[in-house]
Picture (cartoon, rainbow, N blue to C red):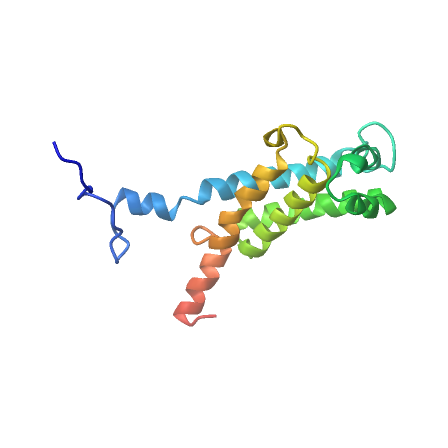
Length: 173
């Protein structure tokens, strides 16, 4: 018995009509886009509708959370900046998550929305979840990594970006 390279390796057809594999490859980012979009819309709405969160102090408030993580964060100066106006910071995070989520779901300026999501995740990782041990217990780092494919590829299908791109190609825009 000999071992060698497989002769049946997949090579996409130039016309993009290679069947199930090509279709799956084209739609591969859609589940990630839906998951991140729904999650960030939910996170933003959850913060905006939580009366305890958008307060300077008290149980469940953004202010108390920032004070609790200040000494264990990777960048205490970032937390100090948030503590100058915790309620304003809470609103900024909530509206940022909402904008990122909506942009991602619609596929509108997807790369910019994904970059925004990555920056929110990075800032939360460096502040709130930095002290999680082991590191993979903190959820902000995986979110940061999950945004990377959308930063690189955008939303090539089922998106406002794709519709605008198609209109530009047809010359109707």
